[in-house]
Image (cartoon, rainbow, N blue to C red; front, top):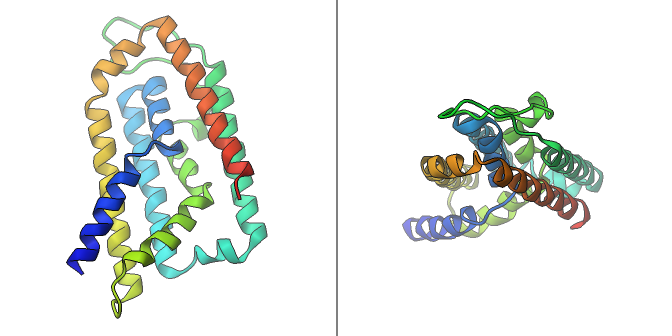
Length: 209
């Protein structure tokens, strides 16, 4: 059991370190709302992961692969959301704040669903590939004769904790990055790149099987 958990932990670390839509949404919130907004987005991502882990442990995520229409609908919704977030980011216009502001002031064109906790939660829940990932990834590390549901919850919990640690480290090192991004021209270029990458993630989610 310990060997399987150790192998799962190593594999999970490598997966967590790969940047994806969740990480980009956290970074976007860091740029638009500062560290507090990024923390809330991270908590949203964590909540989404917990939902998918529980669903995988209970076998509910298997419905996504069994029902083509459900999987396709959720995938299209996720693709549209990421594309919309990218479009909003491309159109964002930074506002000049007071020197030393720790929370940059930005226009909130995205509304509540495009910022903070909700943005992280929706980005995760509207991506059916996360549920399919847990459903296919976790069983490979469950020892024979071990309780499937309980072991899945344990391994999924480890994955969530590792992801949380990654975000803690990311936000802890964000101070110099945030100050660098306060420069107007740099911020505009970062917004453009972030918006295009988000749109790219959305297109990939839409076209990949």
